[in-house]
Image 1 (cartoon, rainbow, N blue to C red):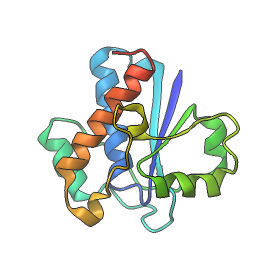
Image 2 (tube, rainbow, N blue to C red):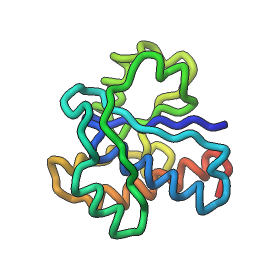
Image 3 (cartoon, rainbow, N blue to C red):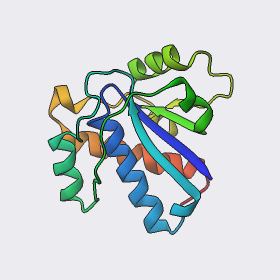
Length: 151
């Protein structure tokens, strides 16, 4: 089983979007039983809150179910529980490091590090650009599946 944890600042916009996009992709590929996919925050600001309405709207627009996700904070134990810990931007990576310590097993990545154009995914909570975030998340998840030789 491949265990993937997506991480962003509050766990209400980008990381749950990536969680549900990848869940949808692996389901459509018929390999969902090979994956465990979740998401978490680096901060405590949104703990217990539902997925942001902008993310819910965009996922509904493209026909991806959003589920009943509630924001949670990443823990040190998540490092041992997951194979891939994937942040959305460089600040997330820095904060993940503060939570888990040294990345001895090379599990921590930015989502767009799996693409030909590695970069940060801008936070739509600030930009309001959920369509752009979705495009970046799709690109990153496709790159991740290619990296895993699942396409």
